[in-house]
Structures are given as C-alpha cells and as structure tokens.
Image (tube, rainbow, N blue to C red):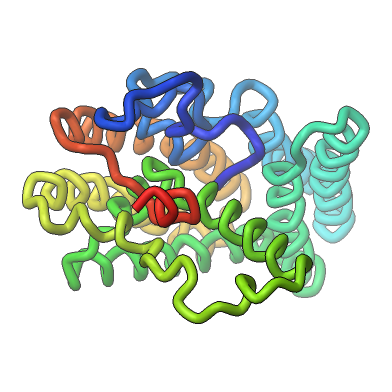
Length: 288
C-alpha cells in the first residue's frame, strides 16, 4: 500500500546493529501499525488522502440522488458518473502538476473507472459499487484462508514492512541490474547472493506470542470486510443507491482507520526485547 510517503521501519539515523530498529511513526496505511506512535490522520493519508478517497463517491451519491428527483434516472446517472470521474482525474492531474506521488490518486481513479464502466454499461446506479463488493469478498476469502491454514496474513504484511522487504527487494534488483549491465562474470555466477530473502517474512511463526497477536489482528481485518459486505450487499440488491452510497462512505475511510488503530494496538510492543529481522541482501551476504 505504499503511496510514495516515507516508509515506516526505515531508520532515520545511525543505529546499533545489535539492537532492533524501531520503525518511525511516519507511515501511511499498513505502515502506520509498525510505528511507536499512531496518528489516525496520517494513517489514512492525511487531509488530502481522505479527500481523494471520499470526494468521488460523495459526489456520485449526492448528485445522483438529487438529480434523480427530476424523474430522469439515466440523466442523473450520467451527471453523477461524470462528476465522480472528474474528481478522480483532478486528483491525479494535481499530483502530476505538483510532482508528488500519484499512486494513491491513480489507484482511486482506476477503482472509480471500473465502477463507472459497470454502472454505465448496465444503466443501474447501484452497479457503481459492485466492484467494491467483489474486492471486499475476495479480501475476506483470502484472509479467512490465511487464518484457516494458520498463516495470518497481517503477520506477513507487517513483517514485510517492518523488515523493509520491499526496500531490500528493490535494492537487490538494482544491484543485479548493475552487475548485468557491467557484463562481468559475477552477474551470472551460480549461487551469488543465495541467501533466502523470504526468511525474515516467516521467522515470526516460530514465536507463539507473535502468531497470537497477528491472528487477532487478522480477525479485525476479516471483520472489516465482513461488516462492509453484511451492510452493503442487502442495500445493493434492494436498489437503494442513496443508502448504499452512504454506507460506502461511512464504512470506507473511518472504519479502515479504526481497524488500522486496533491492529497497531495489538502489534505494538510485539517485538520488544526481540532482535530485529535482518532481511537477506547483498550487504548482508558480504558481511557474512
């Protein structure tokens, strides 16, 4: 879920390699749960992130409900869809113009685009939300499977963030690319940097306390998607666009922020007194 903001877990100054590196508090989304402190506003993307996430859906439901009072539902749907797409496009263009990361805004635009496609093609306003229902169902299914096989997905995600796995993977790729361009024998030497970079992602499963914490946190996320589906699916089949749009907004950013906070409460202190994970990488291989 990275959106280009500073990554939690990345050290900001000299550290003692013998001690665990505490994640910084500066993180968005799942990165926020690894910090020493939790900021709800920062976790959900700040004011700008909230506006980008909420405005397209808010414009859609308000304009559709108001315009449909005139009796022409097709025209109401058209205006609502245009306003929704327009808001998402403005967010992307504004970020491009300011040369700020566009991942979050672009992701929102793609999600809105799918909803617009289904609603316009079917002529049914409630289909604007059908993609969200399917994605929530898919997330819920994946989470329940991870719990059933005792590999709680929150543990994998948090440990990946905490261990800086994405940063290590990117550095490894750049390192390999530089060696390949150099054309040296080192670039194709079998067994080079053979240490398993995934080891740090699964080491936590040997600690029953960490497994317990991550299992509980994963149930919070299962509850998030289950509540959304339990509320929104009946409204979808009842063709209640106004209430469906309202539920979409209420159960969106606010509920997501609450679950992030609950996850932080459970995860906080989980690694106290434990050595920090050391992801495998070129530097680690050389030092070994």
